[in-house]
View 1 (cartoon, one colour):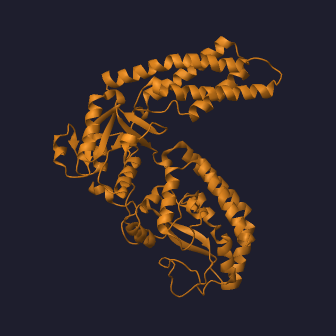
View 2 (cartoon, helix red, strand yellow):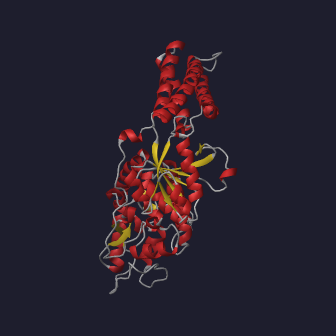
View 3 (cartoon, helix red, strand yellow):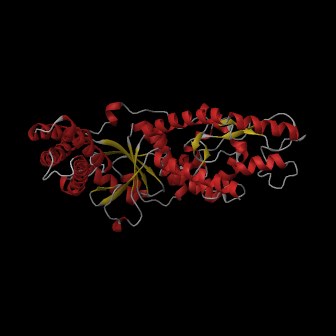
Length: 471
């Protein structure tokens, strides 16, 4: 997998040609819609409507029951995309989510009518919904298996890995199309002679070439002898092309069924979360952060003015310090800070790692750095879209190049925009601390990103700043 080993941060030194992101293809809308997931959602909607009519629930009761069912079943992911279409396998999850909805409706009814006896109309609606829904879901799964076998409604898949493991996956997909994967290419991680006898094309140019040539929508990673860094590189490539990514886990024979794990016959496959920047919730993050940053700039304008005056009195103009940093997909941008270091005849800001103990940092500069007030102008970077409020720390190009060459997966942190604060910072990784630990925290943040995680990091950041000021 030669092409997959190139770091995403390559080509960032000043004067070098910047590489374009790997996203060059968008799959058609119909190819991205999963028919079974859509039908399961339609069945639930039809079951809710039928239950509303049969129970005679009024509008308010129907809405309460519908909202409770929607929250519980979306949270339980009963409408998710899946390979293994088995009603019996899914029945416990489906019943559990309906039970949660019934409990929510019961709590609402208890608050609304504390002296009422028996089930409310909304509770009856949930029970009738469960009967209709569970009677229809087996037929949906059966129709999905039939469509995959007879109509070849399968997603085109590329398999990456070693010959024996990858070949077994390919043959299983071909023998059992009811799992919804049609293998169209194999990207080998070794020179196994058995690769020549596989029933699909063996592509040595790399994963990006395979995805583009075959219009693949799924990438399956089998066992391989490659390093974790190379495999992660390949997974990032798949994400950037908008592909679903499945991984055969290590110790697969001992791997239990659980959330996020699917089955291709006897092969467990772990669903990897796609690029967070492709999710609708990421757009919500962008809008919220831009609005919060703009509001914060307005509120903190007097603080900025006082800090600027103090800098002018201590060391003159300019007040704002500009520095080139690396953001999402290796693109560079100008980061703004209140200057905390006195001007010198030689500008070493792009290559000097730390100014701790530097004689050029005066009392005002030390206060600004200790209190993080010097970072307030970065809110303008957030408004502009160069950065986010929460994300990996933005670093200078020369250090990105250096750290990417030394630390595995450092480059992978540039999958999302840099942030004013981040998971690494709230865990004490500020200043002259371990780069490897920072990279691990940043990649953990990207893999587990959610709006709640962002909020948690912001709360921890506020707490850290408050404690710092009390010292």
